[in-house]
Image 1 (cartoon, rainbow over the protein chains, first blue to last red):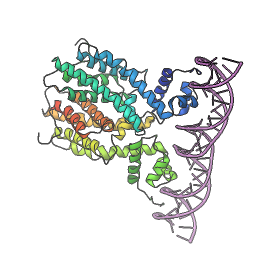
Image 2 (tube, rainbow over the protein chains, first blue to last red; image 1 turned 45 degrees about the vertical axis):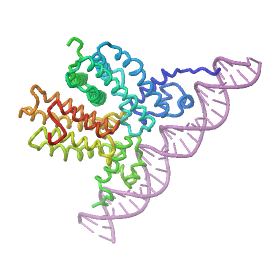
Image 3 (cartoon, protein in one colour; image 1 turned 30 degrees about the vertical axis):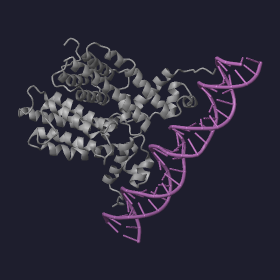
Length: 200
Length: 200
DNA sequence: CTTGTTATATATCGATCGATCTATTATTAT
DNA sequence: ATAATAATAGATCGATCGATATATAACAAG
């Protein structure tokens, strides 16, 4: 019983996401956002309250569509937990090497952005911790099935692999050399007897 | 043959550094900078050209005083290259755990800041690559002296350890838990037979 | 003391920032 | 048809942004 929206949230948030991703939060102006979304500031504020609220919605969608809804559940359903771990790194490496998307990870960029308010930082921590939780769960599955080198501690190994994720995503923005990124990932997977290469 | 400066560059850049470090480049205004330095915008522009020029000078001093001038040369002079590597991680871990300094690394924060111009990004890459070069040099020294596990490739190990540095510094801002940071560093040093603990 | 040079402060520039007010449009429910 | 509701555009708000023009202050060299 109201006027219908001319731009749906998904398309709107995707366009805003690309701006925030490339330029950062502070460097992306309302003017940039209205130009990209073809919507007035009034319309944006009616939906999201303010710029920070829009940004948080962008972050949520970024994390949800990128990880929570698609990638992680699919990987967790794999019979072999080692494939789940390798699959995550394969996806993140491919994303880091892609030229169609801005380099680096929007969540990690935001984690290092000192201008982010506490609500935003909290959201970032929550979503990034889901990645580590995924790794820990798969490593525990793998350990229970004796698929890991003896003495491997799932919780500690998950922290180390999560660190590898952070390094990968930072390096993707710092020096996006696909060869180097692959080398880094392989070196971090090797101690667990894992590799990106499918037939090895 | 000219009017003397009322504030020396070192003190000025230190105060500006703390602002950029905590808030980021875009979120730090000229007003913030003039308040902190007790200098007018005209004086700042006379010295540094513009805000970006001031920021680059801050970055240079940050990298020089933190790494190039003091830490790395002292470590490189140690007789045992393993002590040099461990010493670097000990210093970075202590810095990451300190509450007297803003969390995280200004260079890495800037690397992920999409608003940085190319001159700034180039400076960041150059200074961070010095860290990896240091690690590579020490690992080569160690390999030559047969101080590393057999088969260790210095260049690859340096990339992995540099990744650990990135992860450490990101995690310091994301979740600055000293216990966790130490655990991460130890886990990354262990494969090379190294440890932070001096008597082990 | 004068001249030249540099550092600084004050005042202010136009532009742009995020945000809001008012009015209008498009829809559903009655 | 009419009323109620929500979405949007257009205009504009005061504040603040980075930057600059002008004038003054403090020193060294002659």
